[in-house]
Length: 597
Image 1 (cartoon, rainbow, N blue to C red):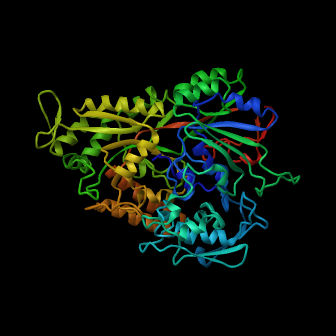
Image 2: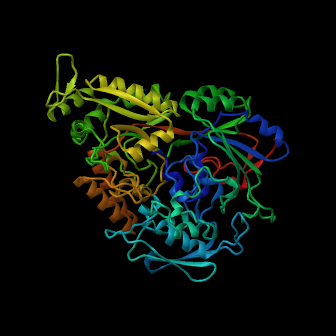
Image 3: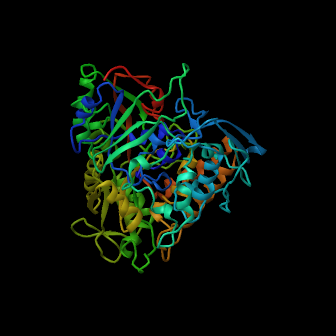
């Protein structure tokens, strides 16, 4: 939530996964310039993240602040410039039976980062014993469920290099999912799957936490972890067993080391970049004009990919459920407000997004109206039925009065029972724009008589409150875009999805939720997501996803705000940058060269 989880899990290439990671920068601990002096002759890159990794186990990861884009490759990569799928760990694939059967062939001689062979056994293990295992709470599982029955692929080994995937019915995103999900090493992890801990769960659920020696984490990507200092940095070194070689037969990647700093503030990231301690930076709106003036002198380039693929929103907690102790997640009085469509629509009309674009984003953003990326062929434009909530506080007040609310003599909004309307907005501290957006919304809602409290937490505490305790009113957050394929958001929109946070149901390995229920419109969106994945004709798929967007824009589980332009500053000593909003500057990191240190 962003928790920005989908860029990492569902954009097919490890390098696109890297994008979610390269959007941050770090200033904790010792000065990064020391790494330059220590390794002056070694090609290296110093980049950063806004948050520390929460796990080293990719199957359990639910945030963008991870290490996985560096240490894993995909079977098949999706080129962000062409949107075409390209061979990676798989050298080829064949599709049969109208897309219901796929055979992938691994490259010959693949190895894990510990030197052990990577074979079809690892692919079968990853799917059958991890991702499709009902005892493993991996968010990937939701995207692999097919049709109303929730059937999952059958995966079997044909020989040492070939794996067959079969499904019972057509599933349009099937090849993307087969190709993009991380493959994990059976020889290291199989025992943890097949043995249980004292809690009765597979030991795999607690293995490879961030307290694990990073050298013991085995991957198949361009880098391996060399060291990790909590809340400060991760250092990666080149994986000597990585499969890629250039046309001259030289091993890739060319960059020997990655220093991945953890700087939990966009302001500090800017300072660190300007002082020369970082090689790239997600350019925030407040830092753009300053950096633009320094671009030539300081020898870096600012790339503009247009509207970012992410989405930023507020969402109310619509859950009527209770925890295992019988305590409601949401105050029943507030729950009554939040579950009124008119209340959510009124909030949307009350937020001045144009002012937010100008004041918070310095004009370097665009108001959003849909969860689907605006450049996707599946995006529903307003002229075809997408409901848009332009700033109209009077309309907001009218909707509230129609829904049974009223105003007192101080112009404070009360519900039908006379309770003042007041709730708390949860957000995370790392992004300055989030705090500025929240401050503006507090004023906007005050203008229609609502008192908004703010709760600002560190990212991991924020995620814990959203996903574990679930006792929140409303949150300001975002998800990294799933590219042009809407099914990338299936675990957000499917009613049993791991990231269906606005009305989260029970999840594997977690305490049950008492009294949980889904609304009719949630069920209809769930049905449309199933239907959209079953349909192979792209024009028919468009109509299905158009209808889901019409419902979502009417019911407003997410109130869309403003998304930044995709701006990234990169030192000009890096050669081979092929920038795009879908891929960012380092989607082809393996072939990027450093001209000087």
